[in-house]
Image (cartoon, rainbow, N blue to C red; front, side, top):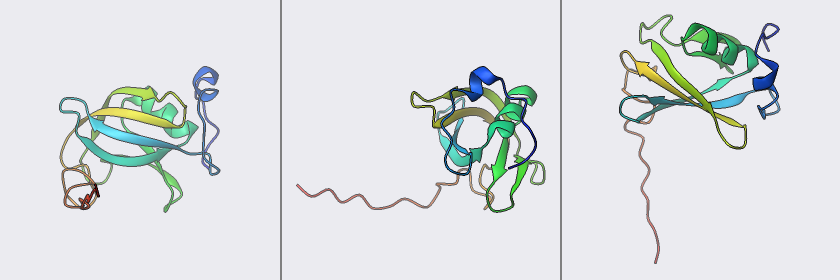
Amino acid sequence: MGAQSSLSPGIADRLKRDAAGLVAAIVQRHDTGEVLMLAWMDDEALHRTLTTGRATYYSRSRQRYWVKGETSGNVQRVVSVALDCDGDALLVRVDQHGPACHTGTATCFTGHELPVEVES
């Protein structure tokens, strides 16, 4: 991955990363609870997020860091970050400015609902 991280060892030790060294980051609107997107962070992306207040992710396709809104203007200001009980996922609560999805929709899940057909 990218640069050497300055992430606190106390936090780094609690993370359970996948084989690529990444942790899933579930992004949620802090005021409504709406789930906006799923992204990925490594130690350095998490460090940057925690120290700048700007949501920073690691792009698996582009193999680089990106700050949400750096090109679109749809900035995510970080309100809080929580680690789940297993240490393998982060909940990033943000103040979202503009659409969260790169397609221009409010969330990355807008219009992609799947039918639930429960058999009795």
